[in-house]
Image 1 (cartoon, rainbow, N blue to C red):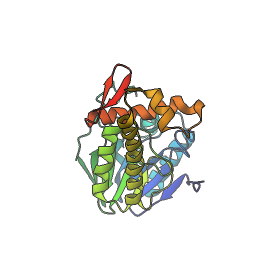
Image 2 (cartoon, rainbow, N blue to C red):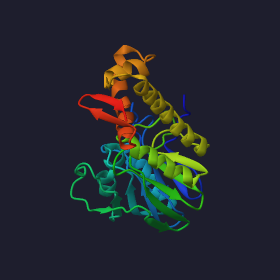
Image 3 (spheres, rainbow, N blue to C red):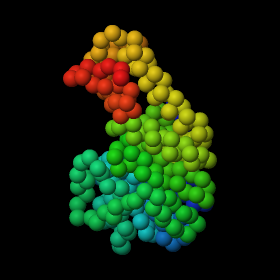
Image 4 (cartoon, helix red, strand yellow):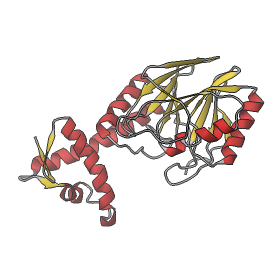
Length: 279
């Protein structure tokens, strides 16, 4: 079991973590939000979810004790536990920081009221006293997902692309694997995730994520190659996930189809009606 994450943690001279105080099955101990910089004006990465007064109070206490204010709030993606708290934060401030988020390419943006949101751009940089923060578009978990690289400490804020415990979920495996490769090339010294504890051995963690997915992919290719006929998703599940309890097969089917769709994009598999076959 992961160690308990404190509500407020000074991770370094540049970065303070403020826990979102919203524990749950998907958020683990809560959403990690991060305050970056050493000067009067600082950047907040993610805003927790709406209706959590404890988080707003803790964030306010950090800003007061540090004698600083928010110049910008960067939202890593559209999920409610990352963007939902933006209106609550703004209501508690006597000034208006700039709100930034990468645009979604699949669906409309979430409704957070009449708040101006400035579109992020891949490679965009935010400079605050003590830190330079680079935005990297890393789709896969969602189409709009970004991570932040703090170059001074070679720290990566991975949001939901890489978690502090367990493996991340994703909407598109093909994009997700490309994003993992993009992060791996950075070779960060440490990862501060959107959920869970700090990842102290990020390169091996990323390599594990990639290896885990490629192993499953190889299994699927082997089964389809050996089959004389195209197979349905559930027929594949019963072979590839034979050690998984039957009542979990519908969940396994969702995961398997993520792999199949990636293999289609890779040109290794093709879909025929409700069935799949090797190219």
